[in-house]
Amino acid sequence: MMRPNRRSEARTNAHPRSLFLPILWMALLVASPKLALARDYAQAKVEQLEVTSTNYAGQPLVYPQSGTPEVTALVVHMPPGSSTGWHKHPVPVYAYMLEGELTVRTENGIEKKFVKGEPIIEVLNLMHNGTNTGKKTASLVVFYTGFKGMPNVIKADNQKP
Image (tube, rainbow, N blue to C red):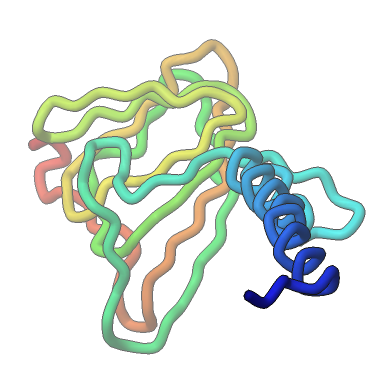
């Protein structure tokens, strides 16, 4: 009968220990997604605002499949009581509330209030109206992720569905 030598015993015994640290490291990364994201930006603090596959009305996110991509970035300032008017977006739109509050109502009755510091994942091809329901100016950064030749906003004909 052959006896295993010390070298093969050491290799066999070390195997579980050698997997422990990589498994622990992966578990920490999975359990702490913010830390993993922050690692990608040297000397920056990263705060995750949203991770989603749907917009605030529950529609799945979709991206344009044709045309030349074009991104439009705006800062929108809305005085108290003002509204956007009824409109829809044929392209994906994302926004971030800088100040104030904005209440958005969709044509199918969904109403959602957004306040300073919140992201907005806009509805697609659904009429909606945003109103500043607060007491101060609502300001938001808006990103339209469309393509050349396609309007970012389509106003309702009668301005109320």
